[in-house]
Length: 125
Length: 172
Image 1 (cartoon, helix red, strand yellow):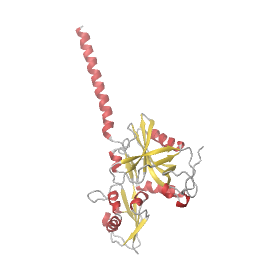
Image 2 (cartoon, helix red, strand yellow):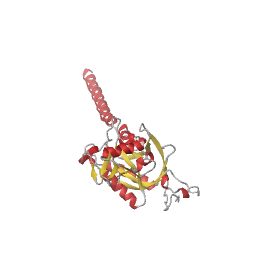
Image 3 (tube, one colour):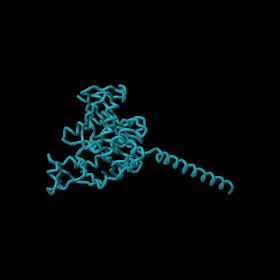
Image 4 (cartoon, chains in turn cyan, blue):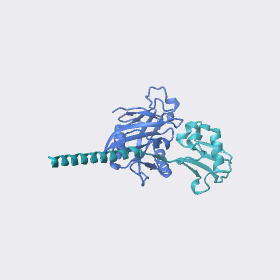
């Protein structure tokens, strides 16, 4: 009995709309290799350009996260189920956030300078 | 795949997303979008005069932002949360079709960080929250080549009824 790879909804359009695929594989890496050979469009969504699993791609063998096993070298045996589980991340950028207080501080500094100039001018008067 | 996509959502669910963003301000909120994709509609139901959206949101699954270290500009949903959202969806005959999050004091446009961490196919709703008040709400889908997002039109429908076999609309 081969290893079964469960394909999450967002990746099914790149895997012939299939929810799972079966391969003979001795390790998780081998199974994922077969998967991305059969469905080449999956590769860029699972792996970075240098061939590493993307950080938000979680892979489980049965109920175990391979990060706590031997990662992609985790051995598999016939009948095992490999699940690809997404984790979701995002957020806005820091740059603009830092711009706002920096801009406010600059305006405040300009304000202080103008008040000091006014004070000096008044003293001269 | 993202071309001409349209996302249907009721006014009350859209308001709940905006409220969630206001409640967690200045931190980012996040949650799952539960609904149906048009590919789930049976072919036999097509062409019967029913108006079929590309995708419809029928319920929300609010989540806790797991990014304790940087919650003002980052959100994170763990694999366990994803599984919980998928389970909740399955129990109602729905599926997780996307995710929402807020951009506190930033525009409702995806950041480079959003793009870098996005999955294809999912709808990503972003609500902008300025000084605690929700503003624009947009939706996006990652292009097949991962190079950029495409905007996805949001259509507010008061209530979209879902039959066991597909979509039909009952405007109220």
